Amino acid sequence: MTPETQGDPHQRRAELAASLEAVRGRIGEACAAAGRDAGEVRLLAVTKTFPASDAALLSDLGVTDLAENRDQEAGPKAAEVAGLRPAASVRWHMVGRLQRNKAKSVAEWASEVQSVDSQRLAEALAKAVHTAREAGIRSGPLDVLLQASLDSAAGAAGRGGCPLGDLPQLADIIARSGESLRLRGVMAVAPLGVDPEPAFARLAEAHARVRRDHPDAVELSAGMSGDLEAAVAHGSTCVRVGTALLGGRGLASP
Image (tube, rainbow, N blue to C red; front, side, top):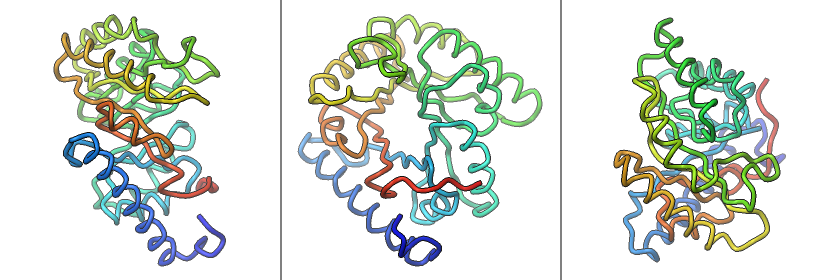
């Protein structure tokens, strides 16, 4: 967001439309280079720290998958967007590290949590979803992705993540959680300061191992503004883009 577009919804829409075209162009080129169909890769717009008005404008432009990384920002923003665009079919995704005590709140606004990295978190979410369904707050299961750690140590720099070798066991636990959670795949963030290619190759192999026992876990969420091409080359089906789409970090809506 630039000073010139702040407060001017028409200019902001034009700015977002141009960025969206550029990002979709990058995805298309990356898919072509990898011999893949561009329709295989979903764009997840990361709206953290940006106002609900930006999320509403993105929905006007056809972006239906929006992501946040902090529950305390996401819940109010999702409610505000619902008020601004009541007819929009928006799915909200939690992509940040999640504490178990936030499970109840997240179950009330999220369609998908991409950052499940432990049995205790999975159990907390399953319980929260069951409670939310009984209260009539949600009608279906919560889609979840296993967050894999591609760092040298699990949870490096506070980023969370399950060690690659432990993913099959965690996948089995979620699959046995009943009707509250639905395993959809694997997510990861590339290590900082190194070539992401080897890490994404390891991730693709780990995802394939999970899919052998859980064939419906088709989602591989990898790649962000700076490395989406490398992720697409290694089979990513979902890229999480913030800066390249919305610009420098803005101020969140109240």
